[in-house]
Image (cartoon, rainbow, N blue to C red; front, side, top):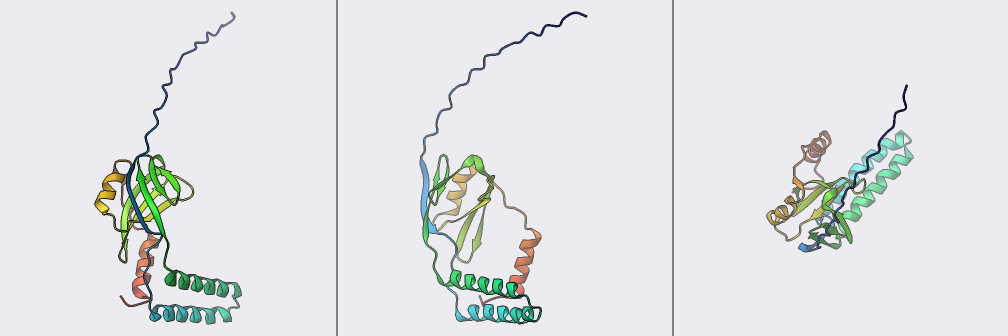
Length: 181
């Protein structure tokens, strides 16, 4: 057997420098952090009654920790319903979305869609990032069509189909309304 000689071929690959994208602001607006609706007394009494009834049932089962969790959640619901949200600046740029002082690049976005809650329009953006997996930005006084046009150049517009949990939550909120419309 003869000796085999391997011939090593070196290829020269020319790498052209990537031209940096000039950061331009396409659209800028200020909006609240979360949707907010002023609640009336009926809302608070309904929540208190539900928590009280569940606490009585859990008291017989000696589930002290679950009672404490329910009271804590009732307190969170009270605070969210009474304290108005602060405003934050959102900015659509040529590189991505700048919100809360953090830039989320277009490459990290998967899809986007719009929903309405009370009198607010919400922009939802799914990301490839572990945290946050979804950005939810209120549009405030911005036009939905204009925002859609600017984002659609970089991210796919796709409304996700409703899941079992979405349908269940809607059914429950329809059957047990916490306040009258």
